[in-house]
Image (cartoon, rainbow, N blue to C red; front, side, top):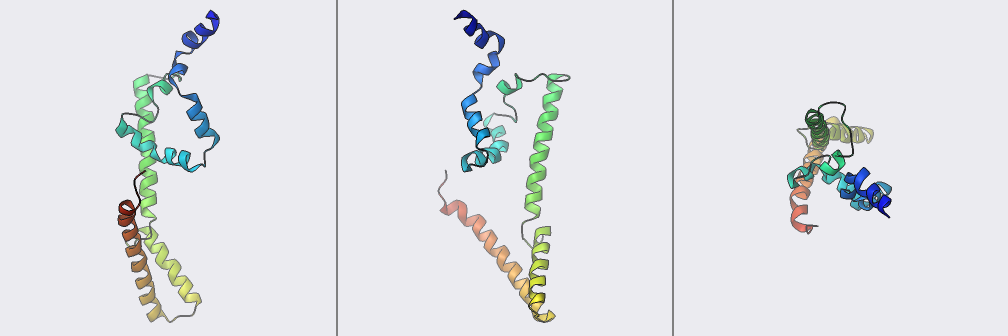
Length: 151
């Protein structure tokens, strides 16, 4: 009927541009591997011409002040979040130069201390285990992209 058409096209034109079924599937199954990958691929959308909020989604929101300034601040906060998260995740890697490496070495030292290993040999073992783990981690980081086929 004409009223149904006017409702779809007239009152909410931005809804016609939005793929609701896809987004409902993502939101209804947030812990599925596919949707989890979508969440972590969000920062890469910028390089595909997308932004944190696509233009059809922006059309659904009213901004409290100037649109350009509001969406600039939103993008700035979005990228600040991702940068902070990635720097934090990098920092906790168990590599000797990072904080995660120091925590890993301290944990290994405590385990060896509870096994009543003498301090001189314990320090050598902690160093060897820490460096071995770092080497294994680096090999995995280099080898996995070469071995695992791209999706």
